[in-house]
Structure formats: structure tokens, C-alpha cells
Image 1: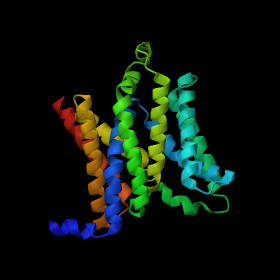
Image 2: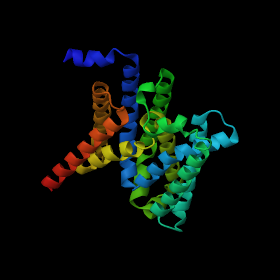
Image 3: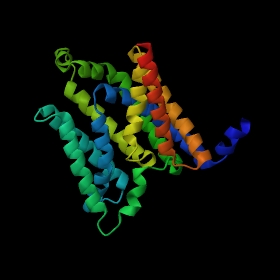
Image 4: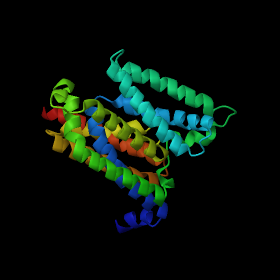
Length: 271
């Protein structure tokens, strides 16, 4: 058993990956609960797809730092989706689907020009093993900001998600809360894309929270189970991927999927 842990922890890149997972997975667990409750699965998926468009926009505008262009575009994209969704001109899922499809098509068109898309294909599945100490520090800062936001704004955001009109009557700035949450989600998704992958980011946001919802009786349990399942999937997915020589992201999602189906079955049995 001792050898099981010492074998993979002796490598620096594995220790860095473990540190990143210990930061990323609680973030996903926390945000996922509100995303599930607010029925924003399409929203987070669209944000992930918009990463390619952010890179493309950066190239067109001459921005060399692809991370900066992704972050800026994601913030604008998230606020625009919120604006159009609240306007009520069409169903939220329709608006998000249209913008998601359009943005990823534009991104692919620009990045594939001249056959250069191969250099960006790694973003599709991510590579947590490539994370550096500096990038871990960035994640830690995002984690601290998220915890502060949650401590200050969670009750207001929860009230807005339950009944917007009632929340407004209690002088809660509903639009501001929704925009702040959208921007925070966009930043976390974009910061994590490089290591989690565009194709998997939404699964890691939704599955642990959905699993926690299957078992929880109150909000405290909901958050606890969501974070627990997210961290469990991340840690054991990393270990299993090392010993099986399989990409880490897909293995983590497989663990999260197994947990979801198990909790769904258990929850349906006890009802």
C-alpha cells in the first residue's frame, strides 16, 4: 500500500497535478450546485465551447496571450448570454444553444485556416499533468475569490434563483448577482480549460453536483456531497490514469459518472 502512494507521488508533475485537482475539484463542486439549481448546464457548456472563439478573436486582434483573450471573451460572452436570456425574447436554452453553435463555428473556422488547428487540439481534452507551480498559484487565487464570493453572496443568489420577484422585493440586486455569478463561472471555466478540456469541463461541473442532489436533504448536505464527489473523482481519476496510462480528464469523468448513476439508483430505492 505504501508503494502504491510513493510510486506516483515521487514525480513532480504528479504532485503538481494533485495540487491542482485539490483546488479545481472543490471549485467545481461549489459552483456546480448553483449551476444545477439554476438549470445552467447549457450555459456552462457554451462557455467551454467559447474558449476556441476567444483564442480566435485574440489572433484576429493580434493578442499574443491566448489565456488573456479567452478570459476577456468569456466574460463578454457570459454577460451577453445573461442579457439576452433575461430579455425573454426566446427560451434560455435556445439562446444559449444558438450562441454556442455560432461561437464554436467561428472559432473553428479561424483556427483551422491553413490547417493550423492541430496546435489547439490539446484544449479539447486538456492535460492536467502539464500544470506549473505558477498556474497552481493562479488557481489558488481564483479559489480564494470564489470562497469569498460564496460567503458574501450565496444567500442572495439562492434567493434570486428561487423567486426573482420576491428577491427584488427584498432589495436584492438580482441582475448584479446573476452577472457576478456568470463572470465568476466564466473565469473558472476558462482558467481550467487548459487542464480539464473543452469536451469535459461541463461534465465535471454538473456530475458531482447532480450526484450530491440525489442524496442530500438540505443545502449543507448538498454542498458537502458535491465537493466530496468532485474531489473523490479527481483524486482517484488521477491515480488510476497514472497506472493505466490513460488521459486524466476522461478517467475523472468516468468516476464522476459512476458516482452519479450509483447515487441515482440509491436515491430512487430509498424514496
